[in-house]
Length: 530
Image 1 (cartoon, one colour):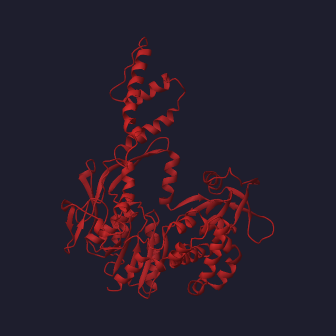
Image 2 (spheres, rainbow, N blue to C red):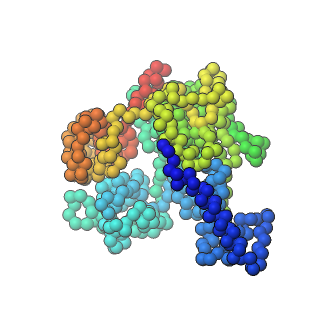
Image 3 (cartoon, rainbow, N blue to C red):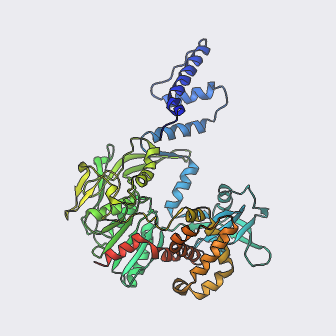
């Protein structure tokens, strides 16, 4: 694609404007006292001068934040500055809980609608149900175009022990329902699903490496072990990482004493780096193990996959992982803000660095996943090329590569056969979600009474799909017969899984969705050979 001429000349034009501005400012200020900026602290000197002399009033705090953020971004894509509020939001998913009322929501037709009630949270205790529409908050209307995600978060979250009064509308219940909720600790779970796929194979899906993740894993592990688990599939797809110590503890469960898990190297790190070695007493050190990864598995997920692969301990299945091998250290500033600075790199036991290149800037760095798709890498393993200089070998003689993520032992291409523009439109614009919410409003109690097992094996998905297509028509989505026929199996399964999530929980969603998961089915095939 040709670059528009305006963009080619934009840097030149910008330089001319900048030089002209400097010259003009110098000319206009010729009679003023000459200002001298100290060599030891240019940034502070310039900020002081801007605050004192700039033509308009400036926000010093905002300028400082932007300056620090831009400076750190110049170093690498993962060194970053966070304001106090940003830091709090970023840390919440990793701390394992936050304070609020405990619901997942969407704004549909200018009304907040509860999508899911978090187990163990204040809303569950107060009787809030998925599908409830929030009409008033603290006796004030809470609908209309003014209501957005930021306002909902600000209004419903709050310090534990404080109260909030909601007025909700529940389908097929006359009138409005007043509910008073005492805000409290809302758990954030890392394990999305853990269940037996057959008599011997357990499945655990881990979505993040948070403070509670190891404890959650151990609970799931013991539950499955009691029901006969002798083989395990650990699903790390879409897991963007988290705490290093949690990843090390989890890897330790799979590796024998003395095995290398990961090590770091950094110029300023004491001793030049640190080694993490497996200890004795792991709960699953010898049994068949499969690790699922994809292009969104990063950081701590890659540490686990790399440790398992390099020690010839298990089989990695899926697609090449993201490629984040930089170690950040966080430093808090007096105002509650903080910055994360990259101080080292991760290396897998065989000696490979999993960090992908970032010399072309943050934008191209995060664009790289799309570039993989364009080059065909997500569809064909032969499209992936590594330099010989990045070649390493495991103790068992297997060839592995560094320089950008973990390449799986068994490649499974991105499944695009049943997804098309028509179906993606229905999903991305929330049509499927809205339909399932309305469908569940009148059938939730009946379905729960019937039970998940009967729903899993005997629910009429064709009738569900037929109703959905009619609903989509009323919303302006004309039926594309050819696209519908192609995506028919996927759509049936997805609608059923979404209904299970609303009626039961997240694990129910995955138990159904996983039926047609090609990567997971490949893992079952491979583990069946063990």
